[in-house]
Structures are given as C-alpha cells and as structure tokens.
Image 1 (tube, rainbow, N blue to C red):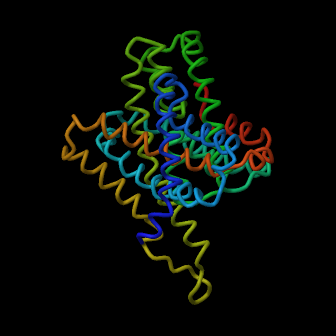
Image 2 (cartoon, rainbow, N blue to C red):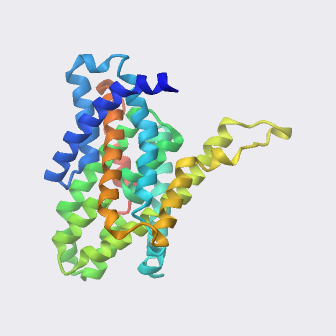
Length: 324
C-alpha cells in the first residue's frame, strides 16, 4: 500500500501544480473555469515538456484521473440538497426530464451514425444533458473511458459553454423572455453551472437565482444516470451463471464514491453540514476535479485527439437541449 502511494506522489504533485495554475486562470476567466483550464494546461505541459511524459509520473496521473476524481464527486455532493427538487416545482421537472431524455437518446443515436465509440457518446450525452464537466467526471469514474474520450467531451462542453454565455442573453431578449423563463431555459440548456450563472447574470432581472436552482436540481440526475451506467458496465463485464444470466454484486452496481455522494447530499439536506462550510467545500470539489482533469490531460497525447476530428463537436451541438 505504501509503495503504491509513493509511486503516485510525483505524478499527483505535477497534477496538483497544474491544477493550482488552472484554478487561478479559472478565477480570472470564469466563463472557461478551472477544470477546463486544467485539462488544457495538462495537455500542453505534456506536449511541451518531454520529461513529464515519463513512466515515473504515469501512476500519479492515473490516480488523479480515478481516485482523486471519485473523491471530488463525494465532496460535490455536500453542495446539493434533495429539497431543491421540490423548490423548483413540478412545472420545471417535466422540462428537465424531457430534455435529458432527448440529450441522452440523441447522443446515442447520432453518435452511432457519426461512428463515435460508445464511451465518447455517453460522455458527451451526460455532459450536455446534465451538468457539464461534473457529470463527465462522475461518469468517467464509473465507465473508465480512454483519456482521449474525456478530452473530446470536455472540449465539446467548453465550446458550447462559451457560445451559450455570448448568445443566450441576446436571444432571450430578442424573444422577450421573462427573467423566470430565461432562468428555466439557461438552467436547463447551458452545461456548466459557472456558465449558467454568467449567462443568467448577463440577462439581469434576477434570472440567475432561478437558473441556479434549476441547474442544481438537474445535477441531481447524476445519481440515477451513474447508477444505471455502473450496472450496465458490471453486467457486460461479468455474465456467468445458468443460462448466461449476469450475477453482479451490489458494490459493482453502486460504486462506493456514489454512495458517498448520496450520503453527502443527504447530510446537507438534513442540515448536518453548516452553511458556512459550503463555499469552502465547493472550492475543494472544484479543485479536486481540476486536479483530476489535469492528470487526464498530462496523460493524453495530441495524436489521440486528432483521430476524432470535428465529429464530437457535431454530436454535442445536436444532442444537447439548446433553444426554447
């Protein structure tokens, strides 16, 4: 155990250093955010600094992309409350569930037509349909895709976040949407929470308060989606027993980090997590996600990304809910 930990420390240290720089840049340019800067800087650092590609660093990069990633999801749960679904009201839930079904179903069908592999389709679907980088992180921890697939999905989210922040307020005013309607639309259609806040704040009239509640409620969809993906992966990997029926232990269908995520959200619902802790825990979750994505970027190579071309972007543009 100690030997394994020592082997991961060099790579984890590099990923944490890259994440620290990415966090600062994310604060300066919040529309992009620290996690996206993390994977971009990691990718650039590995490409520009040849010694960082050596085997000494790889175990730490992989630990960042798995264990640190799983820990970030648990911490992320401390900022969610199951009561938020009730706060949004019955009127918004059909919209969110409908658009989520369209995003996931559209990503599966169109992605197959574009000849993208299953993991890329899944990551882009959950990223555009739920909550951007956080949903991609949670899904990555379950399905364990290739680093290139994660990069395609993050790049897609990044592109449409920028477009949404720039275009959504202008389109909303052109259509004469009320702040309440714009909050529902942006909270449903924009991928990452930071971009939701940026777009709704630009719109004005208090739209951001409603948009954030809608977005956080949508984030709760991570729970059933990730549980379903974990169950599907486990059944595909193990199909033994009479008649080829799958016998899957619950620990495979419900990963430990997801249990931790639900427990953290439950504690927050009960008020066991002081409100004063929320900003610090949210910052910690964002930093851990940034460390994880920096590790993925450091372990990635440009040649692997070039093979996909523009198809992931096309899938992201067509599968997610975009327009009112």
